[in-house]
Amino acid sequence: MKVMLITALFVLLTVIALPSLNVSSTSATRICAIVLASTSVLSYHGCSSIGLESGISLYGGLMQATPTSYGIDLLLGVIGAMAIIPWAPLSAMRNLHLTSGSVFTMLPTNTYYALLVLFSVSGSSFLVSSASLMSVYLSLEMQSFAVYVLAALYRDSETATNAGLTYFLLGGLSSAFILLGSAQLYASLGVISLEEIYVLLSVGNSTVTVMVAFSLTVLASGLYFKLAAAPFHQWAPDVYDRVPTIVTAWLQTMPKLAVLGLLLELTGGISPVVQGSSEAWSSSLMLVAMLSLIIGSVIGLAQVRIKKLLTYSTISHVGFMLLALGAYSIDAVTSFCFYLAQYSITSLASLMILLAFGYVLRTHSSSSLISRAHTTDLELLSELAGQVTRQPMLCLGMAALLFSMAGVPPFVGFFAKQGVLEASITAEYTGLAFLAILASVVSASYYLKVVRLMYFNTNTTTQSSTTITAQPLTSMHTFMMSIMVLVVSLYVLLPSSFLDSTRSLALSVYQL
Image (tube, rainbow, N blue to C red; front, side):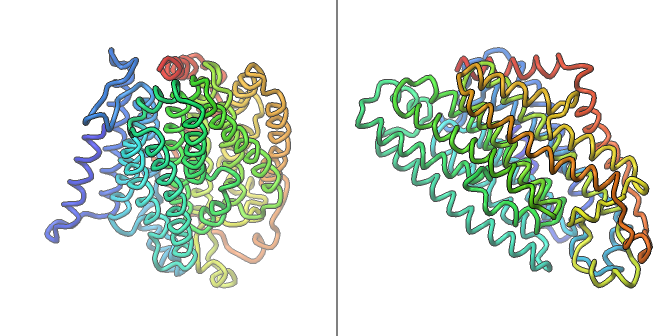
């Protein structure tokens, strides 16, 4: 997969640099989607390869090929391809741009978008395959710099530029924490290979263990920032809200996939250790999980902006996944893998439907031209009021996804949360499991608030004073939304294939 990604990256970079070749943004994004889909196929075949149970060392020990890395690569390819395929028709978006003066066209106006996407996926793929502290840091920076630029891609927008600058400055701070923790870990143990670190931790003395525990805590703090886990989440609501929705869909799913995959690998190596470093690592996971569950559920109640609400929802979901990692066992790892897969699909689908609302529900009357001149994205929850009469299918899909996020049966989110709670109780973290149940109940109130707005509220002001002009969706956008909503809604009819895949992946991680 990595060879294909790097080859495609250099080819696309060369094509863009040559003035004689005029590659449109639409062609570049389609090529990028095909490359990502192809890499997911290769990763799927790699997962079933014989001899990967204990991993294969590559590039002098800097990288490794394991079932975990191939499994995360598969998710990266599938989710990445689905995230960049759907676009509104180019002509419709150009007309909307000329009519409203919008700088958020929701369509990449240059080929650099595809280039940044490939950079981000390449860094993520290298990150989940990293086998040393050096490759972890370099891969993380490769991924991070791509998303920094992606957040500020719309340079004519003051809000998007501000979000990109905020992301860059605070992201640099988190990278400093990761580098500091890695340097201190190397100073304490004298090795940079993750496998050697795991071995030394199992036989380390008490003095070394204290220093290693501190180093791992600092390193984990930087990784928690990348996940937007509480209390390192303050940057996420503003950044995700200020960038265009199509960029939010990427930022909210892809970087988290890679970092969570890395945390899974690190937890698999550290948890079997019976020293204080393992206790420090597990304690940090549980503490951050608890704070994420509380903050993501409680503060989300006060949100009136749709993307900020979804951001706090993401923080709560990250808390569930960290809870599964902290209660490390075969059942907990299985629940983590399953939760990660369903979260990626549900989060991307919800933002794609929100993007579709922005395409089809824009107003163009003279009374709303000034207020809508800065964006074509939906921003406020109130804009969804009464939309069931205009876009019933989009409202139905959004309602199904929100019910899944809330953990309502028979949607897939219910089974994911059930697995995490059962694993936590089995690992004797009953208090945290009870807290997770309360957080899920609290967060369900703001999910249901969105459903109530769509189905039972009416926006009389908008209906009487504006004229709605519906912009058509592409067939690919509609198809992708339909597939993801059906997976979320009809999982209960065919659960064995998903559970078997996550169970096999969990067994390979737990045995490492």
